[in-house]
Figure (cartoon, rainbow, N blue to C red):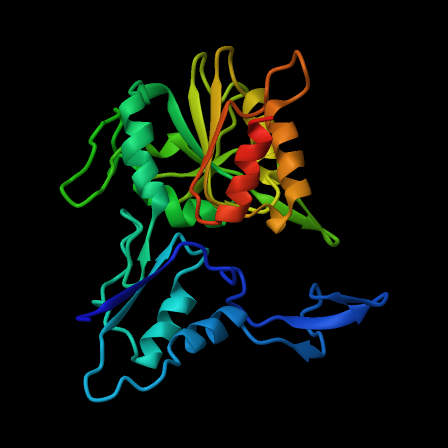
Length: 297
């Protein structure tokens, strides 16, 4: 064997990259207190170190490479993998345009090239991210670039860079924490060419016949997708299409959560479904199997 490449489509510990402080509140573990007396370990980093702890290769070591698909945050994982010195991946600076790094690739970039660009009518196309984190990770992939005042369509620059939309067509929502609950603020924001965050204040933020894609790396229950779809439809003209894409459909690894998601996806009888089309990869095969079964009922 000349080399081995290990592909990890879904990293179960992708959100566990930070140290957290915990305390006990009303008999329950609670991490909303910065000075909590208990400290946990960043599980993602421990997982990365375990991946690097392979048996001795003997006299002829086999080069090993890792590839993760749309990890939630790449930096902490990349630093830990670098530090182990156990992998033969070619080191490179993370490329936000293509979602490609030393150990990483993006399914969202592929979705843009294969699904969004062929739709055409990009002057009425918008991408909305459910939070700032998703916008930070993915907005560069869909920017037309520079100070463009007119929309350009370019299926690639020879390196997989999809040039699509002007800044004010790449929107995101804010989440706010009230006590122990997190909710989505019913406002739309974008970052302009100077890197300044601005609110999209027009009452009708999306014109008649607009196409809006809600995109994220993963969803646990679909709550932010449906909330985002509601906000979008409340600010849109008639004839709008709202689709959603996530790389990883987690659904809490629970069949009942998948069932509830599908019920919400179809909406109440006789009413407009909140989301017209939902797409995801099969990075979590068991959950996607349930999804297909529920849709097929």
